[in-house]
Amino acid sequence: MQGLGIVVAAGAESNFKVGQPVAYILDGAFSEYKVLPSRFAIPLPSLKAEYVPLLSSGLTAAICLDEVSAAGGTGQFAVSLLPLHFSLPCCHTQTLTRNVQLAKKAGCHVIGTCSTDAKMEILKSIGCDRPINYKKEDLNEVLKTEYPKGVDVVYESVGAQMFDTCLDRLALKGRLIVIGFIAGYKSDTGYTPIRGGDTLPYKLLAKSACVRGFLLPLYTNLWVEYHQRLVSMYHAGDLVSQVDRGEASGTGVFNKGLQSIPDAVEYLFTGQSKGKIIVEFPEGNSKL
Image (cartoon, rainbow, N blue to C red; front, side, top):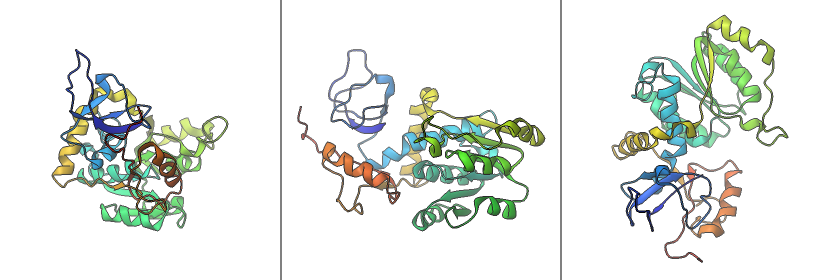
């Protein structure tokens, strides 16, 4: 879905030059060469693995915070959320860490969930106010007890029971933002029906709350602008970008190009990675 590389050929009307480093978000990243329309290419100052977490994960976090979480969008990374309680229940780890950092910079009190103690430490290290290991604590009870007035903004990507819990724990005028439904991806239908869907209108009306969706490909016009902002924040030390090259995978660093893809995918599903998993394609090693 995403990658970095050097332009080796460019069309006559392209704004890019041979030798220029670029990033992209498009199907077909498991390849040595990629042909893509120039509108999908994002210019980079250099090739750096730490720019990868700022692509789909970083852009989803930043654009969603502005365009969906914040009323009307301010272009200031959800500054209008101040000083709300912001919940991030079990998003993809990299999207979660980007969201935590950006929401904290906007002055929000941030709640984040994860599945391991190691990821709890990551959340703590980037300023998450209330990290929750949902395998050890009951999320519903924590929110009900510690946040009796509810949560103002929820960023949700799991679906099923997680969606139901977050919906029930919304504050008055709260916003629940759906960016996925991982719990149902392997089901026959591709999604898991929510419990009590027939009461959804009532629950929203009773709190003057709302549920909104966010799909990154519908915001391609903002990709370059926001990615450049995130890169600037990273270089200024205002944003942590974590990558995992597979050192702890058991199979070694993923630096053999296509040969490393199966090991990297298997490592991803162990849930033990501590950053965006990076597979390096050695220069000049193509079989083409």
